Image 1 (tube, protein in one colour):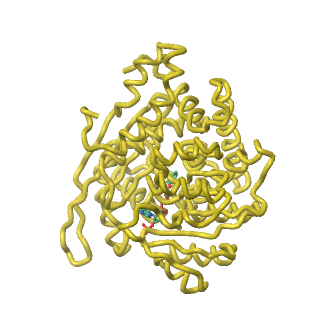
Image 2 (cartoon, protein in one colour):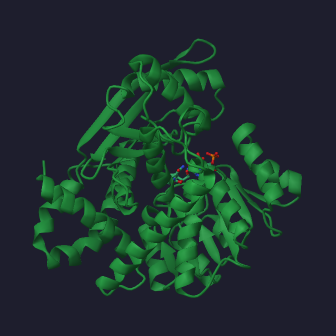
Length: 438
Ligand code: NDP
């Protein structure tokens, strides 16, 4: 804490992992120096990103890339464009990414980057000029064997396309230096769907342990972006009913459920029109609750559900929200977002013994599919939709098995937080020890 003051999100992510590693270090003290090294990024890049708006006004944004660990492969992790982006948030995300990527079974190190640029309300031309300026600096640091960024909040197909185009122009080479690319130029089928689908596959595996499934389950989903949209799609396909969606302005509650037809409207609204979630409520005559910064809880989690899927952003479920969910009979939580539950909230879930899937395990499908995109780029082939989906499903089954088995080995059966932290750590730690901690 003294070394990195004012980095609360990073401290939160590190503490959560360190709490799990005690029994590992006790059993084998050779891991102690690794624990210290793994908390320090291998490299942090911080740069200026100037860009001109449509009126010719100059703006200066901050750009970052945190290269956390290359122990098991090239740095890999998304770019986030959001006004709240700072070094603490990117370090927490990069740290989480190391363990997540380790769990995927694929050879990927961990990193994260982004900018405090806000794409909301900007024209396509403004977003393009920003992305080009961002890539002018980032191109020095990335490469197919070095660091392969992807999308995250505020960075979707449009932004990836503009950045890829700029990289190609500067370097005069067509290589897979970004994932989440368009299908016309090296993207993978199922990449857009992968995080949401993967999260639902993971929860399906948790339910299976209890001889249960999604049929007839009411699910509450937060967010309405990439992860939320495909979480809703897959839950509905497996027989569940999703009754909420949200954005930063509030949430909608549709007790009849977000049907495939309503989801198609939501996708058009969010991805093409770039509109607000309130318009969904207006179209389908359901309730819209505006965001209220004065509340000590998030009213979305007051909606009664069997399973909760936080899929918007970090710390969106606090202690009070977790208590409400448990009180209302919620039996499982599948985190689509990164670190959406505060530590006090996690404790409530664990004490209540509900099935709780931490994001670093349950949302690993996105980066896993990015790994599959890298493989296809290297091989210069395209796999079919069903091939990629089947590989994704297999990976999520393997992650669940690894996490669950690890929790059992240490006598913590079904503690998915512990299992994910320890299983993710051991692979990276062993690689570091074998390579010498440089
Ligand atoms: P998107 O930008 O597509 O969507 C984010 C959604 O969350 C939007 O509905 C957005 O609303 C809402 N949101 C963002 N910030 C806030 C906030 N501070 N308060 C309330 N609502 C907010 O991002 P993704 O769906 O890609 O990402 C969502 C989460 O999933 C993030 O935590 C991300 O790190 C994580 N994740 C994403 C992966 C991916 O493959 N995309 C992979 C693994 C994890 P609005 O439009 O109003 O901003």
